[in-house]
Length: 412
Image (tube, rainbow, N blue to C red; front, side):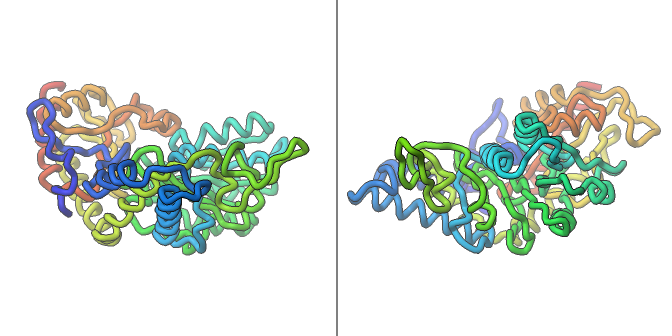
């Protein structure tokens, strides 16, 4: 893992070397991705699909090559099943609107889980409110894993779709999506997987998972902001109506009505982010040059090492401790340890921990992590979250642990 490929890691924060442990929020970018953005705007910037001139032809070719690269990366059957979006949030909002128009009627149900990011809750709440449908969620067990038996009981003849995170953005725990897909499909219910925290960290094969939809973001996988992906099985994408209207997504427009374009363009209204798609392809190529298996193994080593180091500090409470995780650990720091493992007393506010870590050059995330229902279930104001990328190493963790112990001493 070559840290030299990431220029920002040479930065200093408050006079300290940057230790960047906020990768679940966004990842840093390798030089190859930065160069791709400059190349696109410098040499072939032009609107795509509509121009006969050279620049437009080159830009179109680059954009569609990127689509094929994404399809290969997640093992989609066809690049026509790859819809470019602004990110995971945009992808799920688009899907929620289209699913609502096609499938939802009064009294119908959508199921999410108790671990979800707001982006996989609020769009479904909005469509359920519009269609007078019901949003249900899979409850958590005491160990913060999903209650699969409760999920099985939630499935019924009114369930129209299940949408769950592959990896919790708060806990880092890997959800049993294969089981969820299988149980839903037994009732012919489609499943969407929020892959924002899984696609950057492990090999995701949509055909092996048999999921109907998958959403993920470029900026969390070493690519640029403003680009993401909604994968959908062709048989579903052909049925779903578009969520936006305008240029690109049309076939013919008449005052008498409009006919829509073929896949995937039916869902890509307006000028696409062709610079973002090209840079995303370069991020994928970078990850593939390292190897997804190598990335997963490296981040597992970091996560296990960090959890062991945190566990050795008195007063640190790790959520979902000991469970397999994908590069994310959430914890809180106490000034006094309660006898009851699920109860925290004399909590040092996570914001205060994060502020003192930042003063020492360590970037972490604090708060509810856009998952307030989960944080409410934990009965805390928030957590401190560390999350790893392929460029992090054991030395980063050692510096973080030293900084945390100093912050704890100052605040206790």
